[in-house]
Length: 392
Image 1 (tube, rainbow, N blue to C red):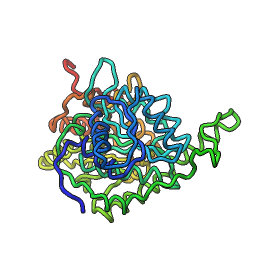
Image 2: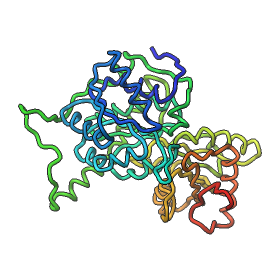
Image 3: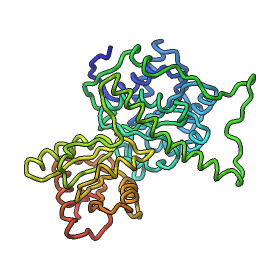
């Protein structure tokens, strides 16, 4: 039976992974993600799970080791942040192309430079088109739940793709929250033992990671793309099963006070909880505001977004990653692409906030909503704003 715990979220993430009984964990420490593999190493050392914990010399090696383990039929897990994810970048797109269901936690952190160890989403956004299923947790409970869900999604026969679970560095990883932690029997009932579709073994020879000549590369890319698109059906099924067993509902885009809303914020990650308070204050002032909290980043929830924005006159899309010379932030680019062909769509503004861990408070979200409303009458000169720059 699930028990209520008060724990640092990074440690809770490790406890959730341990409940999934990984065969192999390979990791290299990097702030603010270190506590996840560190606690897993303690769990392994205590004999609580029968897992090979591999201390490697780099993040590149960590993901490479997971590739080898997964290719041999093992349930594999790793974790990283920021420059560590970039160091993995050579291997990151290889994993989905080989259909290896590895799960990775990413304690989101700004990418250098200047050197910064605090939160934004520039690390995962640099790898957004690599072919991984990508989930965003908003709090500790979602972190626990998504870690367990990720293994079931990844290993489903109709998916067989890697999954990354994103939790904001420090703003989630190092925060203590009350959470419900399932027990081993509950997780065993939800997540069956892993049975690989194909595994490297000298007695049953298969080929993995072979050379892709030009005359088959298009088809391989198409297969990878379709697999990711088609995984959404399974994700929704797994989330429905989770709700039936544990009572907690998950949707690609969560809605907060959207009934009758005319203007809405769209967020990823932990900032959504702060935005909820702003929406409450705006509602008290008579502003018909609402909030959309995106939890599924890849595959992108196209149908859900179109449905969610119906009736809105303004939509303020919040990005936590700067486009650096691009047309708009990565989340806003997806939103605009989806809504481009819609006959009725809200006025869209793009706000780049919280870079490198800069605080964003309730009043900031109130101001952003006010800017979004004013954009109905006067279109902003710039396609996006880096919000809160001193002296601007």
